[in-house]
Image 1 (cartoon, rainbow, N blue to C red):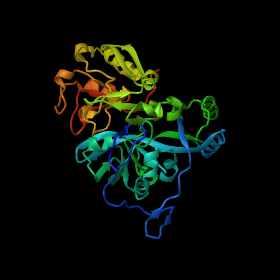
Image 2 (tube, rainbow, N blue to C red):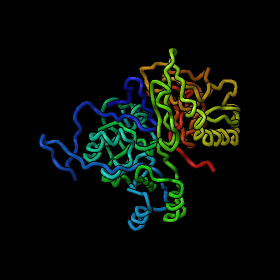
Image 3 (cartoon, rainbow, N blue to C red):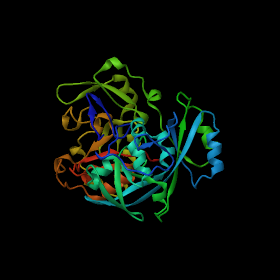
Image 4 (cartoon, helix red, strand yellow):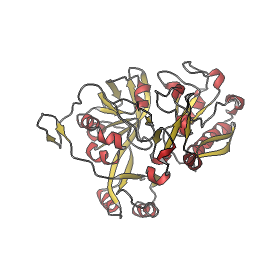
Length: 385
């Protein structure tokens, strides 16, 4: 399954979306699973856990810390990952990407539901193959399958496309055995999965008591961020930390979102250089931080405030209802210097602007196979203060 729509139920890359992989049946060693009667692989079922928090400890958590975290009331599982920023090369060229090394059978319990249910994702990882996000596959020029070269780990076959968190914690995911081949320093990252319905009010404080000093990022499940009325419209998208949105499809490639979702998630604020913007509330602090750094480095003249193309624009990609919703539909993208950075062109944005936005958690559309150089969209959450 590649990224696509099912009727009018649209999946969003940043949240829980459909997974994708090559058309061939996935390969993979039968490492800890049982062989089925047909000779394939039967994986153990994942735990019924809702990812609630990311924990970034200052140093690797030892087994005693993990055991203490799992004893916190409501916690079902704590899954560790090792995160590195390394050079990854594909048919489309080399990119600096985030590569996460995980235990696939553990991590499956805290992956987005659609990824968790796609067994070929996990058998691919167990077989030593890489799983890419859709965006990473596009940046690397991978279409349906192929081989990538990961710095320190060599050539690795791509086994599937899938999203790995809300938002994605990494661009490329590999098995822990592959991660051990990389010599670069890794940052530890823990995902805390809780029993469905667990109150989260006091959970964060209890987790911080176990690992004081660890950075805590909430991964709020959809039912706690919005309560849309299913009668509102024709489709549903989003979820996780950005909130699930019901919407009505209009005739011109636009949508009319559930007003309650808009009220809960879209905010208007004044940011440096550009001025007043309406974006998702999660994006505004990082957008403000990126533009503040650009201003502090005397690069503000490189962004034309009168050539701003908007942020929250509720529509499909290319205004085509056969395509997924645009990230603009969620207020998670911004277009800058529109007139000289049209879709399909190289554009003229200064590389320093791009690097600053990437540092503050954004992905630049100019690096895509079909370049969109005016476009920056939120790819990950970072601390802003």
